[in-house]
Length: 288
Image (cartoon, rainbow, N blue to C red):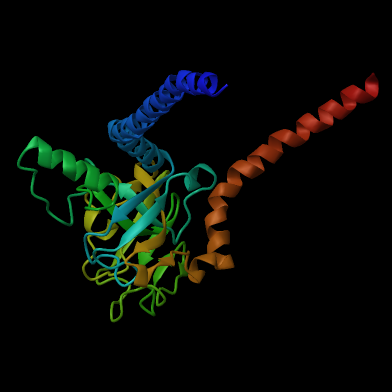
């Protein structure tokens, strides 16, 4: 029995050795798999970066975009080097209102308040484009101003108390005007054409706004179609983070009533046509 058990044990050893070899072989691919995963991550990283950039560009094109403030024209509401977020969807749901702070393109209309040097080469041009797209550097033809008058308004400076009036209604600008500034250093009166806006900077003494472009097409006003969106919040620096709301003076009932006169005409005309149609329809139904 002893010799048989020894032979039996000796016969099993190769099997155990074989199992150990198999176990060692199965562990080797596991180590290699981790290396493959690390390698695949670095291979996929450029794709992830490209996807992130594409998504960011889609968002900035259609939804929200960051803008860099390059000048002092909107102080103290906005300081030079501030960054703001601009809502590009808001004017698809409501009209532009007096008091809104808007970003608009001045291409083929206004000369730049801030002069920029052309990029020295295509690579520098690309990085400048990316910086502009994400609000890191200022756009060459983008402006930010406050809407004072909308299409149909008459904006005038000044009344007996030195205030700007819109359709004869004085607006109190103390809450946002740069300290020590008057509403305007020059007298003017402008009738804002349909689908255009009269815009002004809050730092009136240095702002090259609608007042300085009265000899341009539109008499200094800008096309509504050139508005990129409404600046609604300061995001940088964090110490100045705040929302940009419409000043209370623009909610005056008299101002709203004055501005609604032009808009009421189509409404009245609509009722004038609608009432006879309703009466005819009722008579037709009563005869059936």
